[in-house]
Amino acid sequence: MYIEKGYSPDTLKLLEEKGHSLSSSGTMGSVHAIIKEEDYFYGAADTRRPNSGAIPVD
Image (tube, rainbow, N blue to C red; front, side):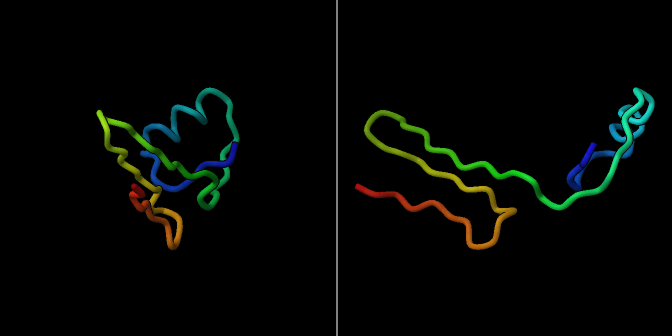
């Protein structure tokens, strides 16, 4: 199983105890989201990616 950085040692130990073979990996995914509240949209981008950002547009 490939694991991104940031998991606690306890989590890694539990996975290994369940029989998983673990390998370190760079960032594998990213999240981008848009939320609408009433008449306004809010955007967010995963800051683990270079040059990520969210820009509101009317």
